[in-house]
Structure formats: C-alpha cells, structure tokens
Image 1 (cartoon, helix red, strand yellow):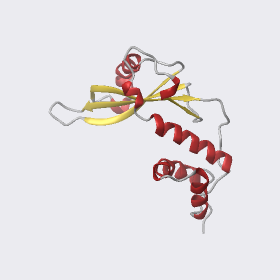
Image 2 (tube, rainbow, N blue to C red):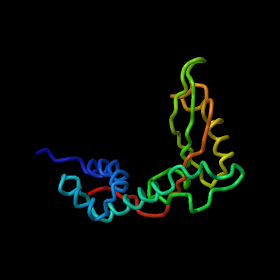
Image 3 (spheres, rainbow, N blue to C red):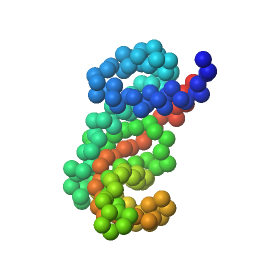
Image 4 (cartoon, helix red, strand yellow):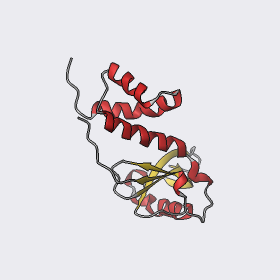
Length: 161
C-alpha cells in the first residue's frame, strides 16, 4: 500500500468530525475509529481539531440572530485554532444573480477582520468587496445575511506528523 502524504489523514478526518459529533461519538471513540481506517494522527492535534469542530457546531448560524447594531458576544463566537490571516472571521450567506430573470445562487463567503464587527459592518464589507472578488465580478449581489463568527485563539499551528 502506498504511503499517504502527512496532512491527508488529518484533512479527511476534519471533514468527518462534524458528522461524528452529530452521531454522538466521543473524541476518543472517533480517534480509535480513524485509526482502524488508517486515518489516525497525533492525539493532541486531533483533540484540538475536535474542540474546534465542537465549538463551531454549537454556534453555527447564531450570528443571524444578533441585533444588527450590536457586537456579537463571546458566547456566539466560536474559538478556533485555524491559521487565519486576521483575528476574526465572519461567515456570510449571500444570494447573487448572473443575469436578470435567472434563479438566485446561494453561497457562503468569509470576511476577515482584526476586530469584532456588528452585522451591519459585516454586510457593508461584503457589498464593498463583492466587485473586487474576481470570481464573483459578473454576478450582482441581491441579498446578504450574516451567519457565523469565529475568533482565532493563540495556539500552535499544528502540522500532522
């Protein structure tokens, strides 16, 4: 059997973790399952990934319920150890249209910021940056809804062994 690249098992596992959380797996039980599948990796790194996914799943979609003129509180911002370029990342649901009369396309975009922002500020960022994103330049933005907030916490930038 060919040897896998170092980060491949971790990448595959990170895709599977949210489903395992919903299915009721414990962190240890899921790591054992991954090892049996040949996808195991270092326990400390796995536990950091598990905690990040658990925090994300608990606050997913809560930003849409924050008043538009208020800053999101720490209770609805997921603490993650992802290597992001800024301290905060906001997930925003957008609806766009290529040509009039065509159906709306729904997707998520991410807004990075060095500070916490209100939903109004986040939406203004999306509208101001929409034309700058070359893959969306041909589409007209119709509707924006803030979705989730993430905050990078200090920690090691893990690499799978």
